Length: 235
Image (cartoon, rainbow, N blue to C red; front, side, top):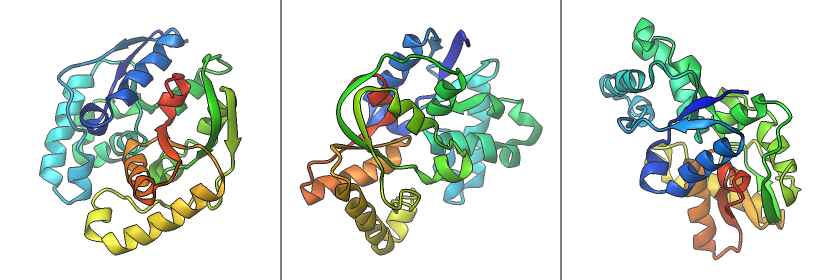
């Protein structure tokens, strides 16, 4: 059992979805993990790197390394941010990464890696799971989130058709290619609503922001909820 971990909360959780950060801490502490929160942390630089601002991304990456150096494990509720740190920092920082990227792990991978653990989560309703692109294709979390959801008391898990199709967010892709993004989102929303689920769940607040906004504009009854919130029993 890992006794200590640092929380990398991410920009979206810090500014828009603080409940996701709180839920992440709840889950970790319930598993006996002592959580630290370095207050100096800022953005990991993913958005800057993806937009071509390499120098700015490098500066933010160096700051990230300085803040989290020495932490044995850094847990984050964002597959996309974890993927950026783990897979892009070698290019950005080289030896200056100081081994920090290897310590960063997405929440569902961390919890699943602890083995057969009882989280003690409860949820009343049906849930369908959307595997975000970074969790599916870069981090390759596999069925870790699904296995965790199956352990939640009272939760009915419903399969999502064409689950591996992108929701159309892609960060600045949704801004620069709005028409294509909207069409991809419409297909994803159709698939979600076809399940009859009460909630769509994912490992990334960014994709959930995109999907949740689309659902609200449709007047849909389906809610978008982060995996951490379900595992914390907060919904």
